[in-house]
Image 1 (tube, rainbow, N blue to C red):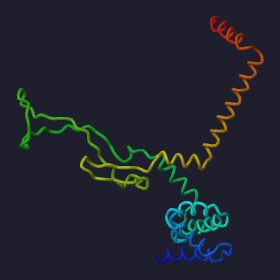
Image 2 (image 1 turned 60 degrees about the vertical axis):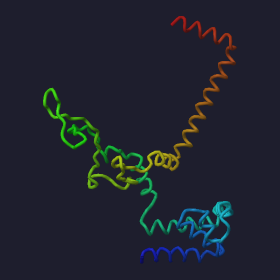
Image 3 (image 1 turned 120 degrees about the horizontal axis):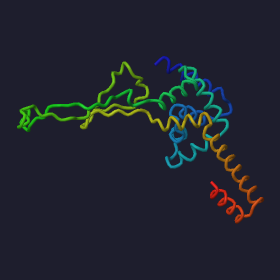
Length: 222
């Protein structure tokens, strides 16, 4: 409780020293930093109807003064909890590279066959006990795996199920952070431009019929 109180006080001090925000904007920033939800933050700060909160919350969040205040408060939180971008990227990499086989093992197991009364069944010809093969799943001891990427483990009617954090989303966030998506689009655009230039050069040298004839001739020689 003491730590949370200190963090809240630091955030409030930062906000109330900001003369560029009014009281409702300060409340909005505080609520937004807590929830990361602009609609809920606006609803709490302005006590408006729900149908307006989503639109107005998004609009207020684009206000440069509000954005600046949000960034300053998030820096306070990062320092208080000793987290930074490196921690964020490291976690995303753990999620992206997580392997389900580290957490569970599959194996085929031979087990006895029982009748409806629960008695063991035997082969009538050989007298040997009847067996069948079943697939079994075993969880790895939690002492030997990183459980920070495990979202849930459930015991259901069909057995145990384990769910890891979403790998696809982790890769999407990493791509966005490192700018891979933008670079890929630039490369695709550049490749497209080169191909267009080559096509244009070919067309200026040969007309379409001559080009087709030369290509056919070359292929027939091969």
